[in-house]
Length: 218
Ligand code: E4P
Image (cartoon, rainbow, N blue to C red):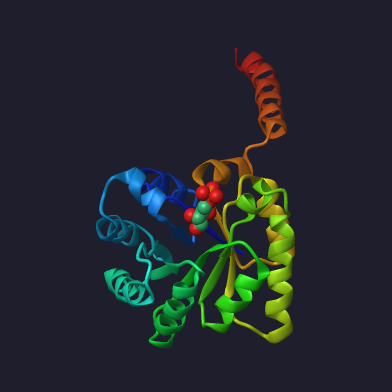
């Protein structure tokens, strides 16, 4: 399973990369806006840091503009994957961009139906928003399972990138379901390995070691 960092922040990216377990990055217009730097500039910086897929999202509304914008984003770096939402105009753009070899990540996916359409249109990856579906009182994990079942049934090669993951439990559940990729905010990445019993156990081991050997050498 690939781990992507869900962030456009260079410090977070550097810190996350130091763990050696990050395979790519997802950004969205809100994350880019937080950095206050134009999307092209920030995406280029991210691509210079990491050798893996980097998603950058279009903000246009018509298919024609999305296609033009998608082409521009894809030209920033060979690792850029263009994010397009599955609205009607978006589907046309996903099809056109995919056909000309631009890799598309279908974002803001909230149903298996949208994911099926995304795959039919040629998407490279689809991003079901697990946490935001949970927020609606539905099951984001069930949505991911349904998408994977449908893709397997028909041999569809679109990768499933579980997005909007709010904690390690989401990550484990989408991993159990077989999602190809999960994108994690930095905070969730840290939560993946922090455990109070590890910290408590370590404290005990070190204190026992100190008591035994500091006394001997004293
Ligand atoms: C995915 O690519 C999105 O950037 C992200 O996962 C959205 O998550 P949120 O619901 O926490 O904003």
